[in-house]
Length: 191
Image (cartoon, rainbow, N blue to C red; front, side, top):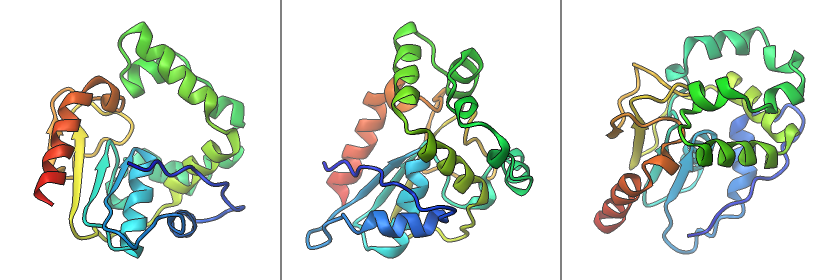
């Protein structure tokens, strides 16, 4: 497993162009698969459109921009992220932790706070803005979508996940790690 590190986005760089630059670090001389969680899932979708992975897995994410929540589309049209201070976007509070991410234990809340704290403000603000302005109507071949029924960040009644995690929140990669790992392992074995 190779973890691809985020690169710095260029000013006003669209998500597909960022994904293209990020894809340049992937060794395509051997067979490979892509796995992306949340925003990383959208990046994986864009990279899968460029490269030829054996398969792509997106977790707690969305595949097509038309399945983004309507409120996100409105926020994108109004360019709200551009006028929101980075410190506010990065703040981790009870509403973010409990309601949106679905953290339950103190350990989960602490981990989420650390993740948000370690995230570069500029990258985070750009990522949110690029999600709000993302346009994609193509589903790459051999793509599998794993989503939780209680995800409040990238929920959509219009998406049709291949694997549904009952009561899975946006933090389910941590909370339901064994169940998700089992799905991924089966996909690898059957690839």
